[in-house]
Length: 315
Image (cartoon, rainbow, N blue to C red):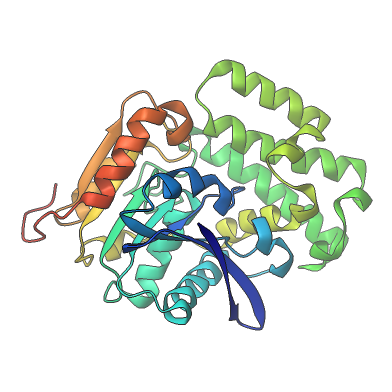
């Protein structure tokens, strides 16, 4: 049985789907996703666990409650903390994919891990930008190109609409050139997420027409997607300093061919978390659950069952 629970945060009504009984597991979806994408996994394991699957603010059923934020990850982390407190989940296992995983790292940097039992991070790295001591940035070798495109768009939008007034403009009322650029950015992200060349070509073609991308990204929420890119531009997200402080069992599920979060960065993250377990999908890109669905399901179950002794040295 699927139950929807509503809760108030910062004057906004958010929601989460609840499935099953047993060990509480909170699953946080990725960028452009919603909580429905995790229902097949939750339903199949509903006798063992109680899954609480929120829609992040700005996505799915919570698209309309998103305003422009200087730090989108901070907003999501505050909402996650409120979900744990308000719904009354005791010591949940936090699982997060992509944006959801980064939300968990932000949560840990703000609230620590005292109120949680386990962590599962799915295809993420702890630092977004490249630096002298970090060579595994978001999008890997494409980092500067992707961020340069975002930067150019931000300055153009800011000049035309003001700092955050773009959120008030419906997608259909944007100039055609702006629609084309938004579709291009979202198309680039999807193209990087998939590893198959034929899917990349299909997405590139869809981005040029900008209509078909609405199947993946509802264009009435275009400002949510744009605002997240702005947040990544302006916040030097770097969570490496908290990794050694994580004191609960942690699993990292990694796509070895990921073009969004480079695999080697995920290896370094696993080494920095004491007693962590890294599960590697050899033939997966960022889309772990689509590239190797059987392997991902096995890894998903293994992460839920993980109870490794935290006194062990780092993996």
